[in-house]
Image 1 (cartoon, rainbow, N blue to C red):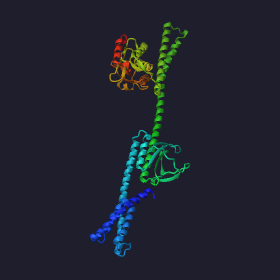
Image 2 (cartoon, one colour):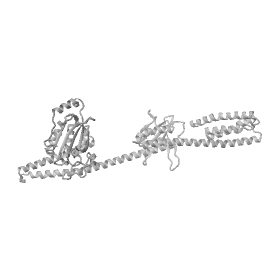
Image 3 (cartoon, rainbow, N blue to C red):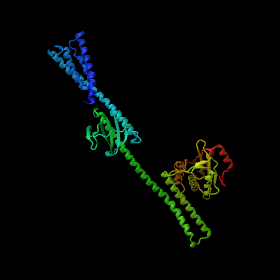
Image 4 (cartoon, rainbow, N blue to C red):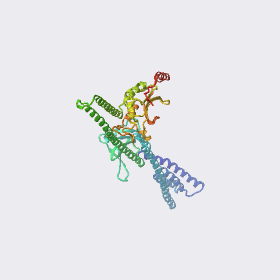
Length: 532
């Protein structure tokens, strides 16, 4: 007899024996004290108690035992199983019928109560499984929790989940840390039936596996999703405990189905993300070609025309030749900046930027950049005030970022708009703010938050032969963030656009107040003539 059968037998004996003994004692007292000639109805209480505890089989056993006990102790002739009087036969038959009916009703009520508790437990377990899967970030992350729930609710000693083809399954969740025993040669597999027919556990022989002895039965439920087998839900319990009951089987099957659907959804989501990445990559390539093609053709055409004018037979005067050479130099410089930005953008997108940071004075880095670009900015409209503590930056990255910001100001602010380059220490953050602002027309309020997006161009901006690629400020943000800083755009006090580059302030003796004060007293601001 298996363990569940032994448990039922123990419960039957533990309830029936005391109940029948107590009923016999009560009948004896009633006959002796109250002179009740027929007190057999008292045995119905014992039948009901046994039926509630042990079910319908217990009710039958208790009913038969009650008739035998009453006949043995209280029917003439006493202490025999012989019934001599017809009335006693009728009494025994009635007791048997009523006992069976009462026992069956009590057992039915007990069965319904057990079913209700089992359904409640099943619903609670399925709710926990569904909640874990519904709130998951990834299915793989919640599989250990699901295995724990199934071990506790399905009466298993161990549960583990394996993903992959049957011959190459990889365990991704296990309720026990110790190594699993060798795979047995006999598995108990859940056989799913078509339609509403309940599933059944079937023992199968696994070829190629040794018949190693084990004190546990191993159960397997296939995890399926999207029309394919994705893995298996494995469980083990002590041998002799019997297979999972209907409630436990439904729980294991439902959990495997939900896990399979979740894994299939994750796979579809991953494929959708991959497709979206490919789509965005194609869109990025198209946008890049569209943005760059015009800006490449224009300087190339200018260079070709200017180079043609330098031929000996062109008939140009020496001043005109000098102007053509200068035009070629300007366009080559523009192409060089465009190619540099494209390379920087590709490095930023690939995460390949590696800053070589050191401590510098901003005037030593930004001042030369402004002077180098001054011919394009206009000698009389640039104000520079860089009194600020030292910063810890990559000098190459900062030079490229400031160059892009100044060229952006020169292009869009207008030829007569003032430009101001200033720096100050932020009081509530470990940054020095480098600000480049202009007195141009500015940008709409809704465009401020998008200026650092790739290929973004302000609607209604200036149109001309060279409108820009829309990558300059994206490169600025990537370079500044690579060196540990941050960027922001806002309206300028001059009326146009202000770009704030927050750079990491130097830490240590370079940044103390005495050093900053000495630096401020020894250095005068660099202010261009005619500055605002």
